[in-house]
Length: 117
Image 1 (cartoon, rainbow, N blue to C red):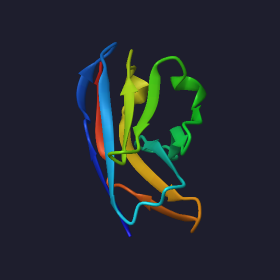
Image 2 (image 1 turned 180 degrees about the vertical axis):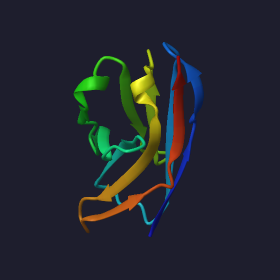
Image 3 (image 1 turned 30 degrees about the horizontal axis):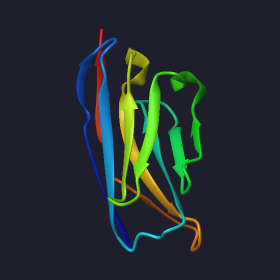
Image 4 (image 1 turned 135 degrees about the horizontal axis):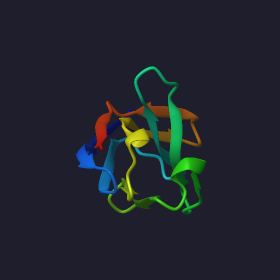
């Protein structure tokens, strides 16, 4: 089992910044992918950004150039730096961890990000 602890959500004004973090504990595999999904009220959950072992990243088109995903494998922690936030970024953000050997995926409980105009 892997436990995920998220932090860093909150209320910010348009154009502001937030950094989300997610720390994995338990049976963390060495070959894995981590990511951030988000879900706004009435909308489908979407992948915002992902990062795999080795550092390969991918981003949702609407956040490219504004969000940066990174990871510190020594601390099993992933970060999402969010700049120039927009009202449409308002959502619950979920951290995920996927063990690419056992093909098991884990989810965090979510952290609310609210961008006010």
